[in-house]
Image 1: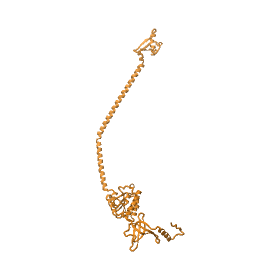
Image 2 (image 1 turned 30 degrees about the horizontal axis):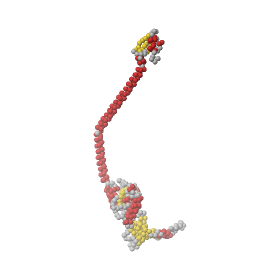
Image 3 (image 1 turned 180 degrees about the vertical axis):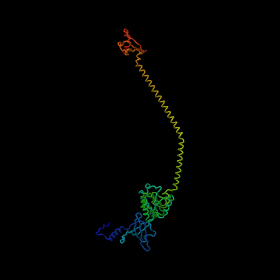
Image 4 (image 1 turned 30 degrees about the vertical axis):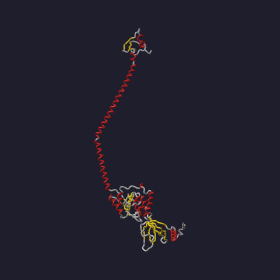
Length: 415
């Protein structure tokens, strides 16, 4: 490891020393293999050295590469993905870094497909393709964001077919490069602008068909992660039905073609009008059937009311008759119980009545003068009134018959 340079404001290093140190450090890297896309290629006639700009589409970073004419094949041009073997070189005079390539190889289709398969497995493991994270499309979007090439057939297919279905469809169109070194950067920036617009309810990314290399930008990891992070639903409309970029797996909806996308992002006004007419007709029929059924119910109401009234009257009459019979039985029972009580009372009254005593032969003697009951012979004075069972009669006390007259009165069975 290189020792740290000791510098200060009083003892600075000259530019040449700093440049030499940087060059020494970079030269220690040795030869390395680098992968990227050729963004710019400069072949000058009569010049043995060729200049190209190698770009990383994911990070939007580029490096200058130089190579001999025999190193870079004539069939390799701008936009091609290559793997090259190069040595980093730092130019002291200009203070720039470049790569001097000794071997440049075109990345074949097989290698591209293998890279895409590895990326597909990685993103699937992270859950970016999961159906649970895909949102529904709005039925009637206020404004549709369209990311597509300038004046492209894809733009025309989406806009014209959408407006044919819904004449009032509104678009915010972002024209970007859909192929080449800057495609990923421009598409990602356009998607983020549309996602930040509150008036945009839906984003459509559209491009016509092409080869795997032409559609490679729509399988780029940076673009896929940007689409996955969108809050606005995204529709992928790339290529033809046979084309399958990874964007189809991340987007909320994958349309087979731009025309198919136009049919799926807006409702068909004519078809919806027919559906409304059908719903209206069925609703009218339903209302007519309901009114007819209610009319029949109303027409039969008097008969039902009469039947209900008769049944209620019969029920109430039966209940009244039963209550009346119960009242009669109750009254009869009460009267019979009262009569029995009265007979018992009469019997007890007769048993306790003085008349019963008289009927047994006893008499009650009272003085006529004051009506007092004679209880002893000495009380029998003057005219007496004798009451017996058959009535009353007057008696007068006689001296010789005193004992005879008084004895029945003064004696009792208990004495």
